[in-house]
Length: 322
Figure 1 (cartoon, one colour):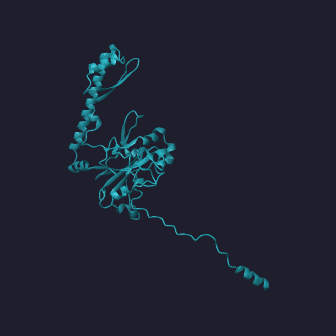
Figure 2 (tube, rainbow, N blue to C red):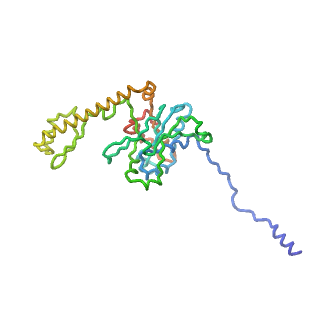
Figure 3 (cartoon, rainbow, N blue to C red):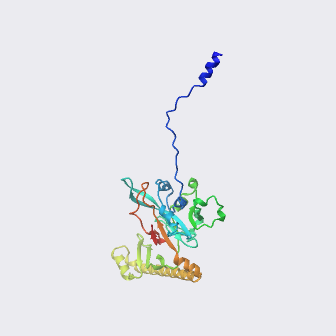
């Protein structure tokens, strides 16, 4: 009996009071309705090994979110968004460094601005304009956070983002040239109501197969006089006298080709406008480009001094920079 009582007493010992501090309930801020919108826009043309550096900072695109609110520049409009990055020297925490700044371009349009991608770089000999689907890119409906429990097919999305389904893990199976193509991509846009650089240019690149070395120069048929131009090359010993006539004929042929290409481009543009419906014409004329930079925050570099309206060589400049 004693043993049993003793055992009971031991079992009923009051445990020592814990010295651990009481647990405090943790509270997390709810995500804003469009908070991940900027992340859903693929940063077109960014090098694959730079992508992680883009997201190392907590960039704040509340200006983009607010633009869709009542009174905002994008409220109630059909919008197509694409991303890009701009390497800039900026200050952060008393240190200057080159940072890949994410930028979002919003195109207000009743239809996709383009289904093509331009591929161009200093290293590539020629520009390519290809369907964006060849680069696994497409316009995808964006579903705001509050609507993600709904059936997607019932939602009438007004926001579309340029998305890329190419997985980074699969890059090692691709040829280097294919991987590099992604770094040279630019969202393509053709504005039929605006003459492009090709139509306006009067300069012709000349690569004349002379001996002992070829001659590379640019001839402007509007400002250069061919006889003087040729004599100057002879004077500078770039061209020999006995090649003068051959060179002149070569330049004339290149000028004819360039003028023909300009005429074709103008004719194609004129024909495209003629075949357009009035609705499509109005859509092109009313299309607007908005360029969004991250707003200033303590968690990311200040980019307020490096903003630029320039988007790319196809889109030109934004109508509004925010």
